[in-house]
Length: 123
Image (cartoon, rainbow, N blue to C red; front, top):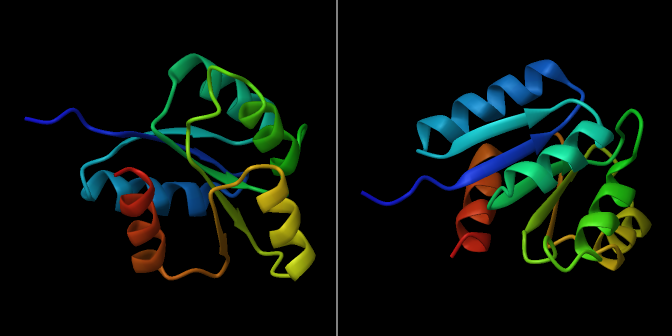
């Protein structure tokens, strides 16, 4: 029995988090949740997830900052981060990549695409 991979979802939309959690748990991932950037950062540091799904527009600390803080930290820089946002502009994606995001998925999203990306990053 392989260890379940742990995924942290940081998003302030409760319904979206619940739906994602349901989907990911059905695919045999362990899921932890955070509803703002500060909580997300703390949980990332404390829980050491295998992957983070990170919204950009977050209360307290935005997703870009959370991503940057984790990627510039020796202990956490290996954690793949999927930026997850309703902002589809190219400059947002560019900024996401500059802050170290490993993937960028725009909402509304195709769950299959997200699950595929997670699988790819958790190899």
